[in-house]
Image 1: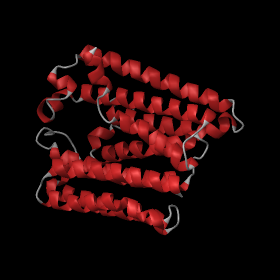
Image 2: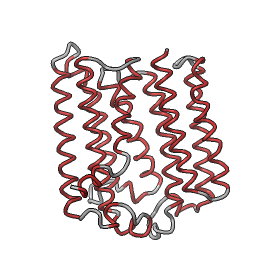
Image 3: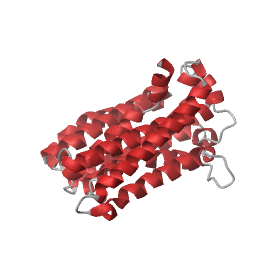
Image 4: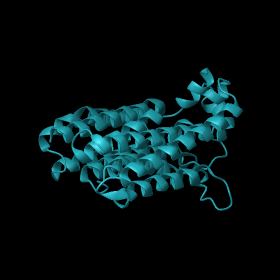
Amino acid sequence: MGSWWVLFRAGNSTTGLLGVLLGSMLALGGLPEAQLAWITALQAISVWSFMCSWNALNDYLDLEIDIVNRPSRPLPSGAISEISAKRGIALMMTVSLISIVGAMSIAGDMEEGVEGWYPALVIWLGALFLLTNYESTGSYSLRLKERGLPGNIAISLSVGMVVLFGAAGVFEPFNERAWAMFTVGVLYSLAREIVKDIEDMEGDEGRNTYAMRVGPEKARMVAWILLLLTLVSLLVPFGIGVFPELHLVGVIPAVILLFMVKGKLMTSEDHAAQQLIKKSMYLTLAAFLGSSLLA
């Protein structure tokens, strides 16, 4: 029982669940109700179980690397067996598929019809395509993980797509607030992925990560440029009226943490830098959600 719990908590699965809820709330300007609440809940479960499955697969395929870089993780530490990991991967993907079918069924009974909900399905399939081509090494795979920066971009896009998935699930696939959060989320994630690769360089010998290809100093510079773009994308929605200017104060804590990242990068404190990026992203999520609900 303990090993299953370790597997299910692997990675940032809860972040995906909250991302779906955030997307629907940004689009609706409040909590989803009635059938929309059921659709949102099922989509959140689908994303959560999907990410559990994918994180477990990632740990399974990276076992030899993680023995060096992250020996305390479930598989390298022996807290969970490889057989249990395989079973968990299959089980969680099955739950994800059942949940998405359930959401589709409810959407089909609503006035908008299943046709209005199809953008959510397209986003789900898009994320599946990106993550499958990230991990897979088959002859027809894009092998994004082996290509360094393209792999980082694929992961970052999949993170941002969670918010769009939530918005599309409530029939608002083109909602400006959701797209603003998508842009911010992608840039945050891409910068953090690059910094994480710098942090893991010792155990990534032989891998074609962006940090290994260009060196840690250039990778840190690129990460900082991405964070400056993140800052711009964070503030622009307030300037063009997507979010009310009055609530700009809500993102100040996130901005402060962003500026603190530069000092950590300059002193090669890569773990501290990527943790600050993560915290800043969470504060931004909270600020955007608050602005949406109070608008």
